[in-house]
Image (cartoon, rainbow, N blue to C red; front, side):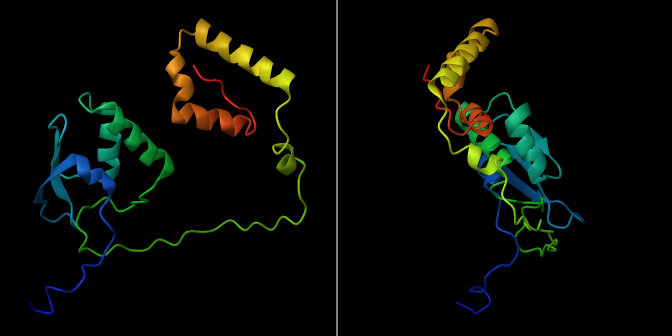
Amino acid sequence: MSSSSLRKVGGRPISKIWEWFVKGDLVPNSKGYYSTTCSFCEYHWFTAKVAKLKKHLAYECTKVDSDTKISILMMLTNNCDDSEDNSYDTSTTSTTKSKKRKSNDRSQTHIDDHYENFPTPLGKEDQINKALAKMFVCCNLPFALIEHPFFIEFVKTLCATYNLPSR
């Protein structure tokens, strides 16, 4: 083995989205972009960009299974792979963008910081449960929605100490 074959390839790691696509040929004069095809519906892109591929699987592809769609939506909401660079080629160098950080110079605490730590009173919890049941019944929503991770995250954002009932 030569020393050049043992050398690590630099660049950004490959996005997880590529598990569901077939990489085609390198597009000439495109800075490392490839053509690609969706594994589910066989839609073809001449120049594949990661953001477009994620949106395709999450919103446009009709043949994608629900588990894959949920994991793609989680990937979109969590930005788990932070791929600003939309290319597949890991040998190209990407420019690092400086990210400004917000300074947290609060020396005084707010009452809102401590309010969420108190448990939800039983009367308030019953009131929330009744309003939630009314919403599900009147809007004809499936009761399975109450156990969906996005719905749970939404409710916990509103009131962290509220415990959702099961379906």
